[in-house]
Length: 99
Image (cartoon, rainbow, N blue to C red; front, top):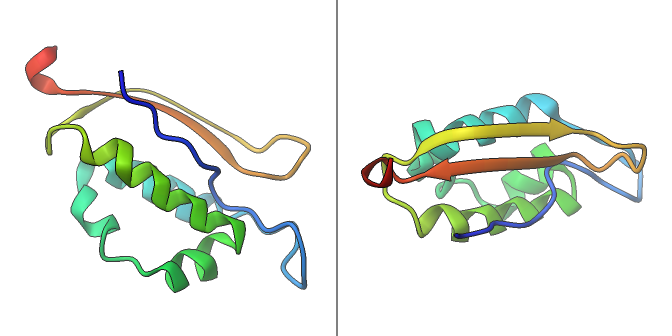
């Protein structure tokens, strides 16, 4: 098993405190299977602009994704914004050759 960790969009301080960008988060999760290479072209500045200063944690999902085949399939996804106002996701991906 391979686990990827890191929050989704969120910012805990400053003028944008409380920021959640569900549209960006959803597109990111979609592209983990549809077009994972497109995510590697996003700069850290773009992550911070779209997902908040703590949202740059999303780059840690790339380590998990890089360990899988390019055509890995999504088995399960859960997205939630708890009271802490930090978007979180859980995703299970599976190599098609293992299915």
